[in-house]
Length: 115
Length: 112
Image (tube, rainbow over all chains, first blue to last red; front, side, top):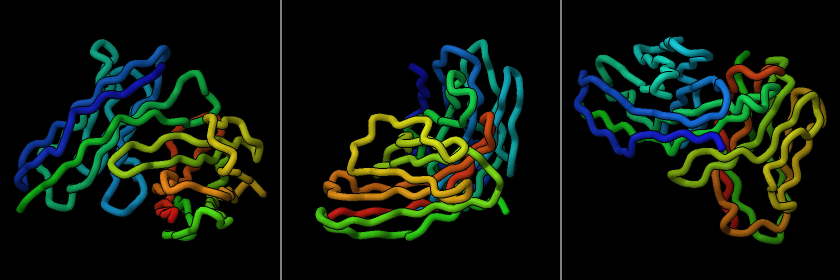
């Protein structure tokens, strides 16, 4: 079945450092790819998405590019802030369930940013 | 309005209780979802409703009973739960045909 693999956390960075969180996927079709963020005690917020190969999603300084050849969707940010501390989930939508947005999530990567 | 609203935010219930979780959205989305998230784990899909009909049940135990009274509301009725059912229950909605899913803040359920 479909699956998403994320790098293990926590990722610990100083403010203004460069961030990369790796994400690779396995899918039988052509899924849409997403990054969601979860702040402590809260639900999930969509951070960015890409729906086809070579699409770049971006939001709030975060970027990720849909790479079909490497089945990857790595999250990057040039300069992190303390407020970016959260858990980041990479996810894909099941292409066999085209009428819905059923999501398969990676295990999540906790990001801790210190001042 | 791009919000999915869940109530209550926190719920503590005994194993013999009956309770309900509620979810509401006013974005005109025709697909609604329940996910379960255990601590330090990713969310896992439980149910999908499309046009108020149950479309997907991911082999969820019958002590969880979903209901979609209308296109804006989604309930999850709970009965005879076990302590291991303690988790964050997340509701989501999306347009018919897929696309991005919007999540609520979740209900943190503790079964004692």
